[in-house]
Length: 286
Image (tube, one colour):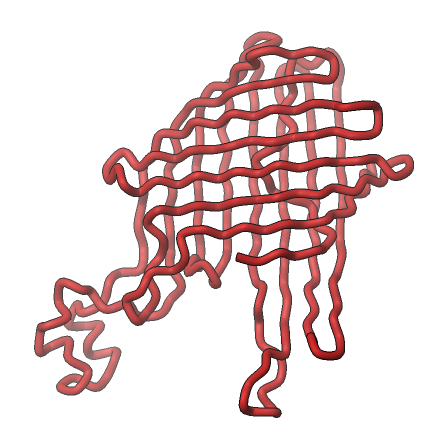
């Protein structure tokens, strides 16, 4: 729904997972920050910050990704004094541990957190576990897959959402019971949380086109084991190029699809599809 040009460290699906049992210890750490400022007919700004960290010791690998985006804009309204309002506000983080059984196989566990109130998510917490298999691994060319389990806990944006099954109940009629606190005590609202148990399938592909350019892509499917129509699909594709030394530029497209999105306070659904296009600067410290 939006295209953003910014410098971010993505907490993305195309995460770097060791393709073989490490032969030596590895420590990497990268930071990123950026901003977009528009003036004149369009008045807005967006700021971004993030970090990635990876530690490898023998067969053990630990990775951390975090990205934060915040933006405001002065939108055209009939009120000249309306000022700036929030237009971007989200945080994504992920911590993952891999244990390599062989050069081609690994077991992993991870925990991820998403805060995105514009998508109706006050908190989304995901716990994942599974098995990774490299289909093929060459020096600069790799394809792999992952299968496993995902448990997602959602705490929706804390607006009171009317329970549609009790919409006709006099105890839930705002005209008869004007106070929200009383209607909440009467059980008129949804509790605002849910837990989803899902099967997870992920396919990833990485290709170093030359010593300075690398292409990465991945698609993740989460199938609700209790409600089949609740399907989530996450996709991204990124092209990275080294500018100089430890500095890289990345062009990335990200798509998030949720067939059963969160519900607004007025009972309507949030959008099922979110897309973001970014241009990112990434600097590796270690």
